[in-house]
Image: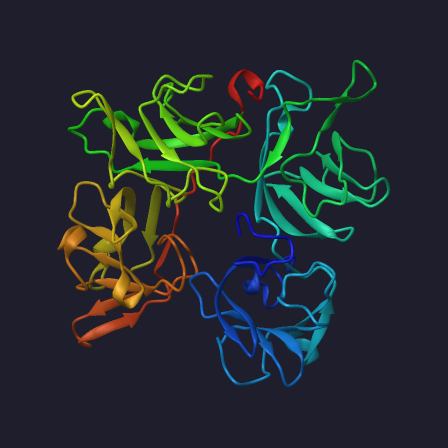
Length: 447
């Protein structure tokens, strides 16, 4: 999706707007393009069989929990209207409702290629309205544009057609132009990079331009791992939290309170790991080129070169990677009296195996790892990271880039049956405490 033209076929789309209390709310989520089907791109929800596909006989887009099949039976549909893909905010979807025995029009149902999360950064912590800082998640439509809400609050990023503005409203979604901050939308599809924000200042009785405030598309946390603990600069391993903007891109500082940072150098067009922090120099402990087409933040595809004093230069370290994945996965639900109940527990990000994150249950040989030949996440209680396809439990990945998607269906080995059997009670999910403040150094956004 990064570097794609506005009219290009998106590689990732999102479905939002259906409340969890309503039938077919399980259609909400992220979908990745998988194949072309009936002459149009098809998308699959991560970790599931649910797809968005085109059905040419009826000239419709369908959302179907049963996957790709030659049928018009579906959970939701929209008239195709000549669209090359299903992500269009103006399309109205009809969703199946059993009580009506029919697909019913849902004006709040949204299929979009806009980002599922944005970060609001840069408002000084001691300034009025600093509570606006944080991560906002896509929740649906408001006045015809994607709308975002800050987790655990009413705070909203919403569009106002009158005046063509994006508003920051700490009171939530409402049909009012009263707000804590605004930016002229300039016909933008979402409140992301490049807009200038005016924030309410009670002492002046008006909104005042704050160039430090920005809404950006970036993860809250980036994990850096893979540097051998016996080597120079091994302390760079760890979790890095979004700290604001630097040199026009997101900057991250290590969550342990050290000065370590991952930042961008516009002079060199490189991502830098700098153990001395966020600063305006090109000296660094590690770097990776930032080619066009990759996300505007440190991602898995980057190749890192780390400083080696003995050689007097940076050398490629193929094991070092930056990932956007959870640090901690919690597995639960296996009843204590059942075989393989010890798989319950907390697993921590440890390394890359087969190009995917692998997790270790501390103090044990138990791991969760990816097995590429069958596209599965495996829980191995005995053989560790390199035990092949032997598994005490597995879940078909179906595009899930880590095992913490709670929609994955886990199959557990049962000796009495001589096979793995689905246990609907077992769930692997991201630990609840993986929440971080999003703020910029000294409350400001740097150059």
